Image 1 (cartoon, rainbow, N blue to C red):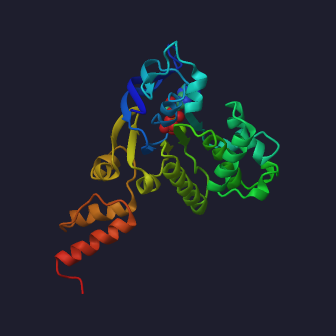
Image 2: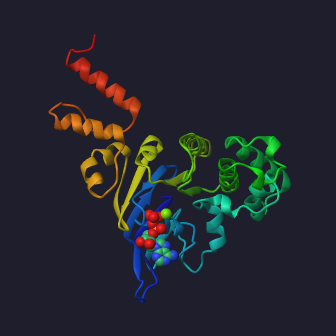
Image 3: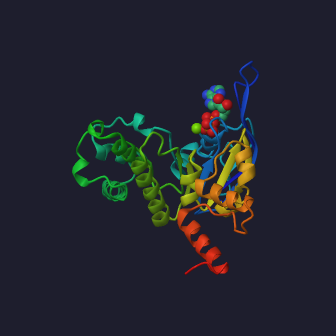
Amino acid sequence: MMIKTEKLTYTYSQGTPFEKTAVNGVDLEIEEGTLVGIIGHTGSGKSTLIQHFNGLIKPTSGKVFIDGEDIYDKSVNIRDVRFKVGLVFQYPEYQIFEETVFKDIAYGPKNMGLGEDEIKERVMQTAELLGISPELMERSPFELSGGQKRRVAIAGVMAMRPKVLILDEPTAGLDPKGRAMIFGQIRDYHEKSGSTVLVVSHSMEDVADFAQKILVMDHGKKFCYATPPEVFARAEEISAIGLSVPQVTKIFSLLREKGIDIRTDVYTVPFAVKTIKEYLEKEGQLP
Ligand SMILES: Nc1ncnc2c1ncn2[C@@H]1O[C@H](COP(=O)(O)OP(=O)(O)O)[C@@H](O)[C@H]1O
Ligand SMILES: [Mg+2]
């Protein structure tokens, strides 16, 4: 198991009037190589949860295992955990500080003590994957557009080639085109690297489209961890905890309510088209 938690609980400001349990008894097992989408409404504990996975915050109680190792055990060097699990924060462009794009992407690999050739190879390869053209390498990152800056910041973590890559709302504040671009690049990275990738998003639509597994968080608890069809087959419960299901899923639920005998675990447009065609064929209504 790449990531495993046991009764993971985190309470902010414990013992004060501001005490808040943000993660509550979460048991989770994420297999190596899985592309996971993490969703839940604001305040459901997504960011707090993922910060445990690279040793950034320590559980109030419970355990976190990465690749079979209890990362909060005294014998474990947290520096090694940070190299193994790369975390891209929300709005990572605010943490850019190097004077050139190249140096910024190279910062992590350099810290790992890699040789210059290896660093250069990784930086150029990751930049290409993220559509950052070579001409930009010697430019100041501060001259770039918002979307470009975001991609430079993401590249910096990807270039470390962590076994686990975690991105907290990587498309927050971007327009639909920018969002699609980053999701596509994350998908490419997952495919090429074969690593475990966790993406936090508040958009069910986006997550449904790319994730192999979805973790749904609700009030600090794990609501479910399952494949997209399994999750969306529970559309009503998902709506009940205040999460929207993809619009296309809603349409199929409505059709079923109207008495049409059609499957409801539909969550992407291409699959919707296929399902409707199959239905019409079955009913003998297709020309
Ligand atoms: N630094 C903090 N101090 C106190 N409470 C916090 C802190 N960060 C988050 N919280 C609270 O913990 C809960 C979970 O927050 P968070 O993990 O950020 O959720 P999400 O990422 O799903 O929006 C929220 O109620 C939030 O207000
Ligand atoms: Mg968050």
